[in-house]
Length: 189
Image (tube, rainbow, N blue to C red):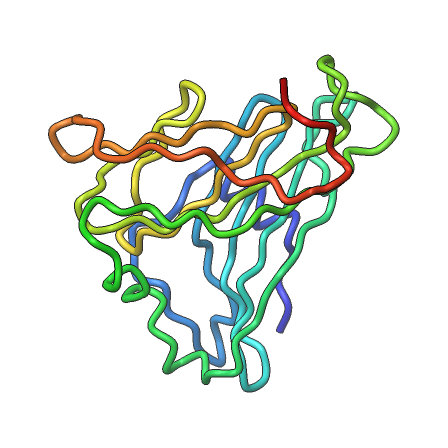
C-alpha cells in the first residue's frame, strides 16, 4: 500500500519527527525519518518498504503563491536487503561520537518563479550523525537529533549552508558545509 507523500509530508512539517522506532511491516509500509523547513522551502524524508527492498525517499516542498505547501519533486534510493532485516537505527554505529556524514546533494528546480536572490533551486543533503551529537545548527535553525541520527537539511539560497554539530552541553564539536553537486550552478563568490 502506497502512502500519500504530500499529506504525510504536511503532517511531518506540522508535527515533527515522532520519537519512536522506525518499524516497517506488511501493514506499516512507510515511516517518517526527518524534516527540515527553511522559510518557504521544506524537505521530508521517509523510509518505505518495497517488494524485497526498502526505499529511502526525500520529498521537496515549497509554499505557493496562495500560502499552501506544494510538492516540487524529490528522489529516492533503494537497497536490495530485506527491509525487515535492514537496521536503519544502527547505521550510525560506524561513526565516531562527534562525526557527521553529509551524503550527497539533491536539487529540484522551483519552477518559473525565482527566489529573491535569483536561484530557482531547492536543495537538500542527507545527514547522519554520531551518538555524541545532540543538535545541529543550520543557518540559525536548530535541528534536534532523532534517536536514529538521520536528518535532512534543506536550503533555497545560492550558498550551501554550514552545518554545526553540538554535543549535549551545547559545545561545537563539528562543522561542515553541505555539498553541492549541480554543475549548472555558477561558482560561489
